[in-house]
Image (tube, rainbow, N blue to C red; front, side, top):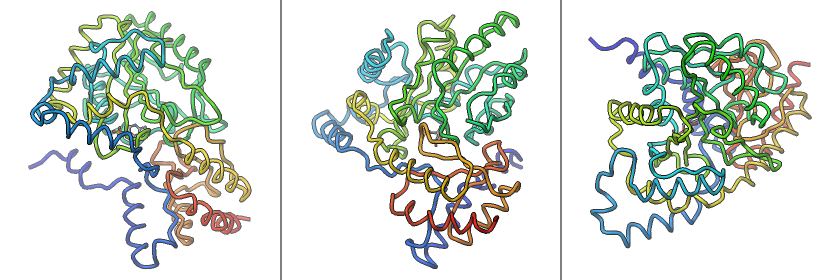
Length: 394
Ligand code: PLP
């Protein structure tokens, strides 16, 4: 009667959601102050005032018809021009409006890219650990997600495994740096290395292999790190950006795809993106928010609270005896469980009202994800509890 696959996707809750909902129920029983909920990646830094001011100004001073009407599918021309200018200033590109397709966040941006690129038997490659939704997004366009085994030493790419995983069916590689869930950031050397492997493979197979750079955490990097702008290193790159995390706007659904001029057959690729957006019922990204982010594109993200939380949690976990890679970006840590079964470990953590997400969901068993986009006091409160949890394994 209905698609089995769609029913499965719609009725089976994600582990993250299940843990979050358990936390809500538990908070109602024992009080919010007893719960240390590390499950969701919902930014807790308040949305900056410049966003509110821009929205109020647009709503007050632009004719309502202009704000609330449909825009053309790739987005309002002025907004796209402003976003292109901001990218040019920051990364030394020479984009104009024709390079920008505004979307409803990064989820829409990456799915539109998969749909635009996928032909029968195509595969998209991702390095583990990875954002679990990639599986549903890639499979929804009839392609296969190929997972490259993780490199737990530092969560950087295992280039041996990566090179072996690229094959004649590989249409694209998903890059997510800063990474959810590991917090790893890829250096310029890493991007160059990946680009050189892919360029060789393109030559060998005689077809393009795209990098789809999923960048919702681009601004969230610590200790003065830089996140390389991949189109500078590799021609076939599509950049998928989002304002969900940097401006704490996840509910407003706004981001974009940047298609650089250097992408060979630019018109064909941009045309396929427009077609994919059309069949995915994109119509246009929210019109008000196109204008708001266009006005605010050059403004900085407030990363200080995340940097502080990341250090506090990392130091606390290390002191408690956990193996953990130092956070470089995003707002997640991905420590090793103290037993092989990550589900059993996260279940045991519930005894202390520590709500952790098993690594298996991110393609990496034996680890767990902690989201630190939460109140600093919750992290402070959690540290003795992590110690008690660790003590159970000594
Ligand atoms: N990609 C990654 C790696 C994410 O972690 C998320 C959200 O958490 C998304 C994409 C989706 O972001 P958006 O809210 O922009 O759709």
